[in-house]
Image (cartoon, rainbow, N blue to C red; front, side, top):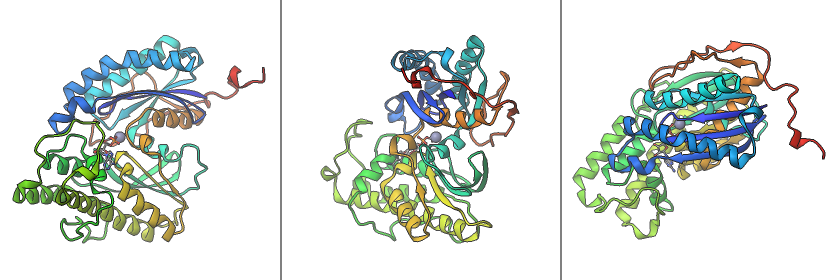
Length: 371
Ligand code: KG4
Ligand code: ZN
C-alpha cells in the first residue's frame, strides 16, 4: 500500500511517501529560522508559510520519486493535536488531493504518528510502553498493539520540549533551543542539585515542567553573565568547545533534570504495569536529546527490554511518520470522509475512523516486478 503523508501541525511543512510502512521519500521545509527570534512558533506566520511551501514540496516529491497521485492508495494527514491554522492547510491540501484523484483520506493523530516512527523497520513486540516527548506533549502511553494506545500519564502544564525551549530563551539561545541545551551540555558533568526534578513526590505518572522552567529563569536572572551576548543564528553549527564552561554546566544540569524526571516516571510505569511491557518506545523531538537517549538505553538494558528509538531526524516532526501510520490504518481498513476536522492543541484526538475493506490489498507496484 502506497500512502502519501502530509504534516503541518506546527512549524514543519512535510510530505512523504511510504510503501507498506517502508519510507520511500520525504520532502520537508522547516520554519525554525522564521520563528527563531520570537522564542516560539508564531501561529499566523506558521500557517502562511505552510500554504507557501505545500505546493512546491508536493511537486518535488512527485518529480523525485517518479510517482504520481495515481499510484497512491490513500492520503494520510496529521489532523492534530496542533496549531489550528497550520492543521487547516494540511487538511485542505489532503482533501483536495483526495477529491481530485478519487483516493481515500486518513486522518492521523500526530502523537500516534510520532510513536509509530519508533517502530519503522522493526518487528516490535506488544504490549509496548511508549514515551512521547515533544514541544507540545509529554506522555507515557501503553500500546496493546500498534493501533491501540492508552495514555497513562501526561504533563499537567508544560511539555519537556517547552522546558528546554524556555530555558534556552532565558539564556538568549534561539528557538527551538532544545538542541543547544543538548549539545552545549555534552561531555560535561551536571550539577545534580542545581535544578529541581519536578513533580516526582506523588504516586502517578503525570509530569509538570513549569517549575523547572521558572527555576532556570530565576537562576539565569540571578546570574545574568550566563546569558549569551549575541543570539547565534538558528540552525547553524554548534561548537560546544567555544562556549563558556559555566553556561555548559547549566545546560548539562538542565539535561540531567529533565532526563532523570522522565526516568523516574518510566520506572514507575514499568513497575506498576498490569501486563509487563515487551518493548520500550520513545519518540518526539526531545527524544533526539543525547542524555535522554543514554538514559533510555541504560533503563532498557537494566529492565531487559528492547528499546526502539527513531533516528534523530525522525524524532522531530516529519511526514514519513504520518505516511507510515496511514499505511497501518489503511491496511486495517480505517479511513475518514471529507468532513474530517482538525483537532487543536490540548484536545484529545477522537478515534472516529470509518471501518471498511483493507486498502492496498492486491495492488502491485510494477517497479518491484522482475523485468
Ligand atoms: O516533535 P517536535 O519536532 O514538535 C512537536 O510536535 O512539538 O518537537 C520539538 C521539540 C522542541 O521543543 C525542541 O526544542 C525539542 O523538540 N528538541 C530537543 C532536541 N531536538 C529537538 N530537545 C532536547 N534535545 C534535542 N536534541
Ligand atoms: Zn510533533
